[in-house]
Image 1 (spheres, rainbow, N blue to C red):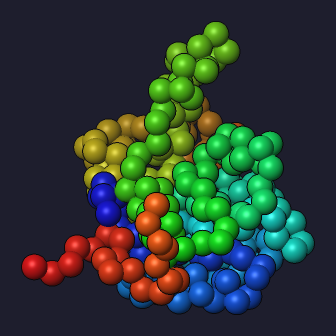
Image 2 (image 1 turned 180 degrees about the horizontal axis):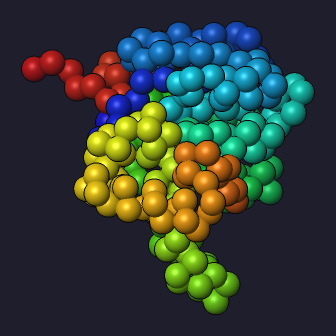
Length: 225
């Protein structure tokens, strides 16, 4: 799976059906990644507060205590926001639209097959989002300078969070020099009155299916030749 300079290491599975959650977690663990599980929105919020946080969130849209949107609100406030893949057997058109608005990268319709699970994770993790529609929608509503500032600030904060404050690793993630990172941090402190690593992130506002077990080729790893 192509993930740029990042490696998928931690996945959180949030599903209130215990049997399905266990099956998904078992399949994902077979890929060689660390898996944590949550059966409620409150448990999921606690997972997001752990260090290090999950890289990717597999979450049911409708949970027993709240909805996925409550968890996405917490994810937006976390230092390193995870990639999100939503799951549902009965998401409404409005919910699907809202999921897209919130930056959910892939959607899994229940019942879930191994093929669909692996494909969704590969797509979410390996492909960059299409920014053109989002940028086009800001024209006439957000000034170019303001948009550039927000993009720079959010990308810097996410990189610093993912790299745990390492300037070298952040520069590698953003494909810039360490000097550029230092200049951006100085500019963010001047404009915001705080370090980019400490302020809250803005809202981000068919063939037969295989059984749900280990994929033949784990995401992010190629079969040895």
